[in-house]
Length: 299
Length: 139
Image (cartoon, rainbow over all chains, first blue to last red; front, side):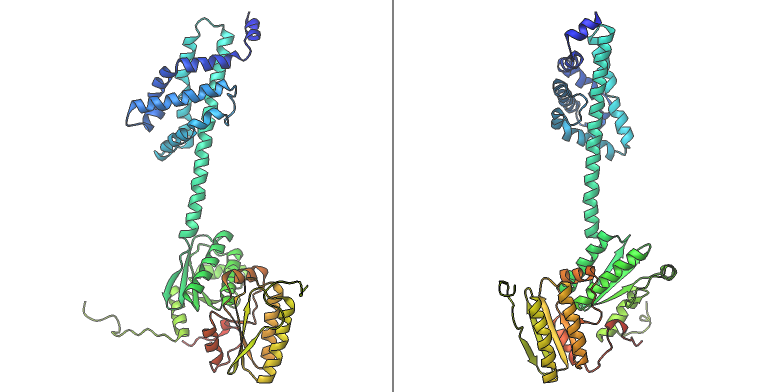
């Protein structure tokens, strides 16, 4: 008897699930609306949550209709992908880890499964099990889709922030007529040092700066790679006709550099930005005079 | 090759004389033979006129390859043999980055941001030693 059923209705569990999803659309959406995932995302109105749930059920039915229950790239998911991404993002913002969001998604399965079993009271155990398995696979695929979307979102965010960081982290400051400074903060890798070099050289041309100060107070470690980047920047600035001074080398870093045998060659170095500025002003023939020595008496 | 070359500069690059200083302005892509010609012209002009400085403006040059880089270094070296100082002026940022990435830091070359700064540098009485980096700072 079970064999006959399996033969006669090939792929029927999928069709059964599809029909069930379309038939019970309203009830499933109602039950989902009470689950923590939907309740937490749609705080304003329950109707909205029900609508969102219906959309997801429709998408699942469409995927089942296309016989692609295991395919996260199935066409049916594209309509709800954005909505799912929004839900996932909302949960992540609420401080949930990816695993927690995933388990919240898993909690969507039991109510649907119970409904399905209730719908198949007189089906053979084999058939019922096949239907439930199909549904589980479908819900699993939904989980994969949400996770995939969340990860893509996260990656896009990281990429955007990295670009922003590149722009934000390399300001070129005009200290005086003909003097520009770049305070470097954070680890200096190839991509960043390239940006630093380009922005610095552009600033040198724009402001006709004869002196440029590279302040590395905010660079935590100086290894041979960083030293090489510094040398390149200094050499490029010199080729354009500007003199480059490296400042902000802390005692510990100076020690490390000597231990590593790093040679900054002909690069002029000063211990602090103030020292570097003093040196440059002297070179330009500019002096700063304090008219009231020792900072004015009365206070 | 040089006949077929449709580009801007072939033959001689004009060498202008401003008092004790010779001024050369390079525009566009420079042909290899033109660069060589310029090198010879400059040597002869310095010897004949007794100029004490050479200013080469390359702000109009978009590409400086290793050959042109070497020619510039050689011009500087031969000029200093003839008792003239050479200043290269107005190198573009992209050109500077390319040269550094090529490993051509041209250590014997003096550089300046603008022709004005270069003239000031050349008319300054102190003939400072090779690179600006070794200049002494008095406290």
